[in-house]
Image (cartoon, rainbow, N blue to C red; front, side, top):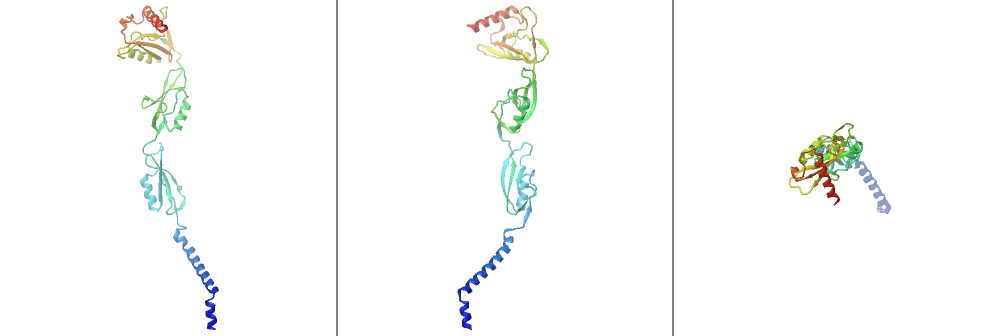
Length: 284
């Protein structure tokens, strides 16, 4: 009887049965402890990180056992260094050790090219500025035939050209055409004045002008205006009239008025002589 039992124990079936039994025990033990090994079932509710400073957000995440991945963006409405977004979102339940992605607001605004707003309407300019992450600053109205169109775009008090790089969030001042005025007034008489004086009077009258410089100019401050159109007086001695926003032509040269044959502004014969000589020179 003992001999039979010994043979049975040594049989292949006995060994297979023993191996199967060991495998079952290992399977049960392994999967019953898998939850504690992997932390299964231990989930944490994601804290609020948005609008917190980067330092505070890192402290919160490290305390809860999360890994951190950081990126940056720019939002002109938010303070520098605060959290703009997070993933997973606030309130989501996640396991410890998971990587949390946060986006931080940059301390310096990235540069963006200035768009070309010249000639477009105010509404269109406002939309273009917003799409380029720029802000609308002051608006200045100037008499001009292009009513409602953008005449100039300015940044920090200076005209800015399309394509110039400026920080996102910058304020842009727009100069907008206000149409021509309906009230007529006398054409200003600037003959014989220095360029600076004449230009100031024309601009103060709400007029625009084209300046043409004749000959070598050694000192622009002392250069004089020797021709204007329209003239202050007509051929009958009456006063010419002009509307606000309209255009004047002026010509400037370095030669003093006394040497050019013009001694006093408003002298029709002297102006006519200058204009004729100027016309002859242009046709030669």
